Length: 108
Image (tube, rainbow, N blue to C red; front, top):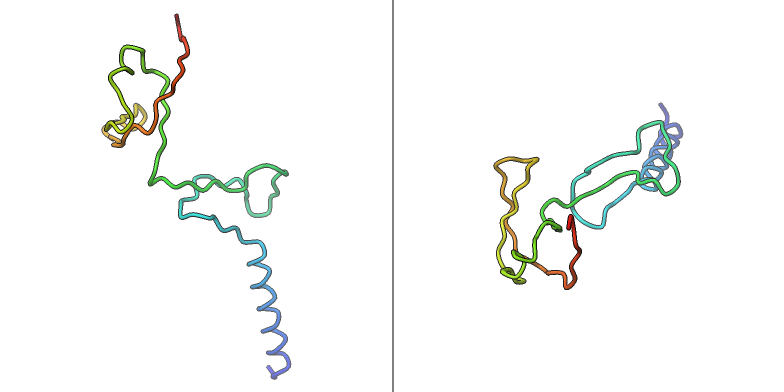
């Protein structure tokens, strides 16, 4: 291979690298790819998420099953432990960030 062929191949390699960068997706935070809808060789529709990236180091849990009897004993900043039926034996520790100022009647 002569110098001219090598120069052409190096130019093609640089062009290919630039093309990859043009189609790269970078998240604005550290995280984990939680779902990947884009598959090699397929296309996705406009507005359809290609990738879902999640930061599992921080969770926000909203609950709707506190009664008016229970909620009056709680205040913002109180420690909480959340357990999930789907993940037995796991306890998520946190604090109450906010308590809604309105109520909704459920099941009477």
